[in-house]
Length: 317
Image (cartoon, rainbow, N blue to C red; front, side):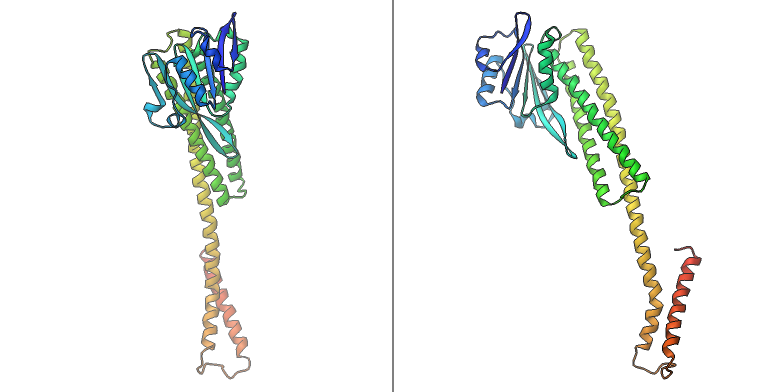
């Protein structure tokens, strides 16, 4: 689906027909949003902009040359937008092309930071003189959503911390939950750092507007991103500490169980030894005495008590 935002009679209106690109002039078009576009829609936009739109595979590449590039007339940038799904983070690629002051966004799924901005662009046309200002607003909204994700992860970390302090259900499953949260934090950090590089590259581009207010707003977003990076890095370190703590607690529990099994084995060893003696087919003391079993049982109990006293005296229990 294609949505074209352009100026008409002092307002910003939109069209969802590629045929309008044949009659619109470049100076009137501000933003072209391609949502899961067809091949015809891509080709029409490429012809209008006189540039090539990257494929989804190119947008998902991690090489720096594929994440940001520019020509004499256009900027190409790729990043990922995060969306929480159950206990995991989904990374959805989004491509930005700014050519001749027109922003083109290419995405495959609905994104709140873009969908909600479409209404604002129409309601406040004076705030969006060109595609760069639309790009600025998208990144600003996206960083705010990333901040919400970081806050959710921080709340989960605090909840896990209370669970550890209360020694509540500390087991292997809890360790896996911490590992999943740690992985989510890593994805968030990588994604935020990627946006930091993208915005920094846009600022350094010779095609970036020289308007001081615009550049200042981009700088403010970079400051917000730097704060988020510090926050998520601290959160990641907390998770590492929690992971080590949980592993230590689980190991202590396992050692405690092994200690019990070892003590029981040692406790029964003297009795087993005595029983094995009297199980041999040889002449033994008191073998003919009808009360020999009483003596044998008492000896077993006495030896077991002696083992227990030995461990107790050495504070090994």
